[in-house]
Image (cartoon, rainbow, N blue to C red; front, side):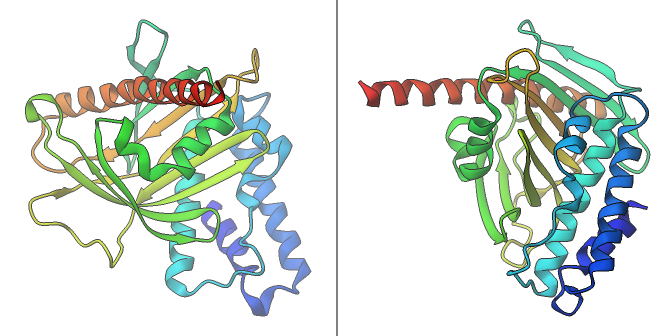
Length: 286
């Protein structure tokens, strides 16, 4: 049903179909039905807030923008990654705890058909979601400055306000247990009410073919969800769904350990980055 829903929504973005109000009405109805289905019976967590504030999946391509076939393909891939991630995160059953840090940061995992093992980081950040969104989305290319697990993030192409194609290069793990990898990803960034999303999945782009001497890994669906904590709206409930295929001949036990530790490390590095930003702002104000 979801793929059909997105085809319906994509249709209303084309010039010759914009005046078909019935199609718009049907698209919105279908999308709300899908969000209700994903949320399930009874109160849910963040997905409930998304449904109340606005329909996440009904976000249409702005009418003043007209995309070519390649651009539309990237937009569709980003939307697909987002809806798949929402579907995975809305299912609360079947998660196994991988690790719990001393500060309460938690990584869980789950094996899914056709995807494999996925990991979910759950932490609380001291900053408001808007500040984290600015750092992770608007300053995405600076991630290599503060996250030692990332060598570089480069935006290859932007499509509208929500979609971009990126190239990321990861650093080798300590002891070079896992060597450098690179990824070409389509990313879909959304803000709905007070909740922020950054979803992604692997893609291909003519500007970045596979590089000699670097293993091209694959990811997705992945998604970061940032929403204000119920107890303190100035803090953020931060959830990161991670699905990676690192390629190469690496034992699964090592992959599982590396990926869960990568998520814990990311939370720590992001906290340090945000704290440094506050320190710099304070110093400039003095």
